Image 1 (cartoon, rainbow, N blue to C red):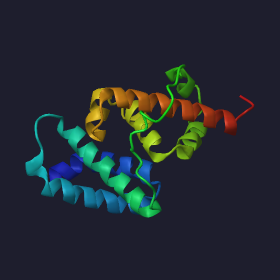
Image 2 (image 1 turned 90 degrees about the horizontal axis):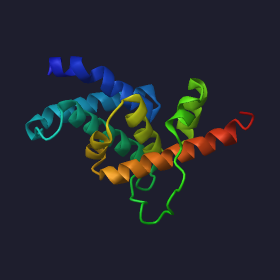
Image 3 (image 1 turned 90 degrees about the vertical axis):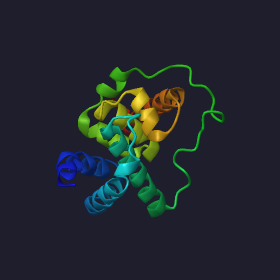
Image 4 (image 1 turned 135 degrees about the horizontal axis):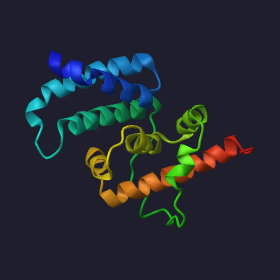
Length: 164
């Protein structure tokens, strides 16, 4: 358990902090997540990397905390059937061009699910396949979710910083 904690605690805490935006909640969540990981080690299957499995537990736990805290409706309800198709894609360069401090502000304005997929893709450098496994969605759904999240981020950026 100590080796497991030593190898993953920093990443788990960092992910909890980025999603929960509260140091106390992030510390508590990290402890709870490691208890959950330890109790469920026998359930880990080799169909994904161990780090992906840990990330999945972390992500899902944090989302549950957010849901309970805000008593909000489901963050990951499939909106693909209900939403109109977005024609133009936002190039990755549009996100990369944002100043880091401004990007943090924009990310904090996004719904937690959108923020999470962008962080998984661009901060954690996860592949679409890995994100799909973590969120238990199809690769196509993840691509669309990322595309929509980038559109929202760009729109928020333009609203907050119209002078750019």
